[in-house]
Image 1 (tube, one colour):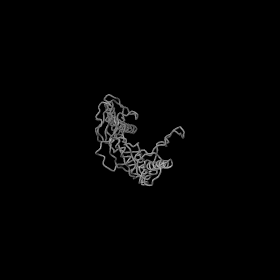
Image 2 (tube, rainbow, N blue to C red; image 1 turned 45 degrees about the vertical axis):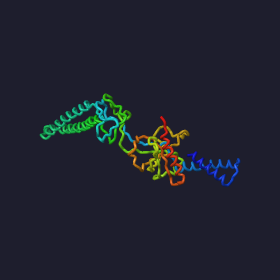
Image 3 (tube, rainbow, N blue to C red; image 1 turned 90 degrees about the vertical axis):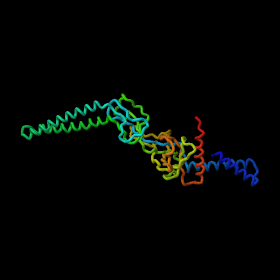
Image 4 (cartoon, rainbow, N blue to C red; image 1 turned 135 degrees about the vertical axis):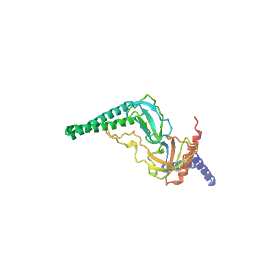
Length: 315
């Protein structure tokens, strides 16, 4: 694009020199060069400031690490990688034998305690017992009922189900492996079926010219020759580089901390269902403000040139 602008500028200068019969000397050539540098600087600088572009755009998706609630050996894997699942469908099963035995044991104890409670109440009614035994057995009944709820929860947890609609990907779990209730040891990763979100990172310099509702365009290396129409849906109001978390270490202003980029979420204004676009794909986003609208054509030409360049990527 810069070459095209320079050639256009030189053509205009040549025409001016011919029409006005301007002599070619060091002063006229210096004026042409300085004029060209100033023109390119103003046009490209204004375009970058009022109509910024981001090379760090990407589609993002949400995942849930599947962590077992109980410790046990995996005996069955029902989920098929990358096959869509509905909420509540079984992902895998853990050996239920020890948990079923615990439930059966508590049920037996609970039945016995309930029987003893009924007998104690009958004795008290017949003036042959005391209230202490009744109260003790009532407390035992409540205790065993609570234990039964907890044991039944563990037994039900041996069947791990899909939390929402989605699918399992990169499945490495195999029967015989041990599942443990540790957040740092998930057994699989569940990808939710939510629509992906598209976020682009912009430098902080043009932040005053990026507004919610601004027209935007996005292109993908995997869809060469196409530029898609978008709009700015949201501007994230915080930068990760400025985060302060509870810590014993005191805050230090380090000069080598990156300045951080403004995260901008865009939404498409056209149907993307006809294109295969894996979530996590990278892209390029340009946002067009309402100021200096006469140079938007340059940014749009650059976006289309970059899109067509994706055809010429050799592997």
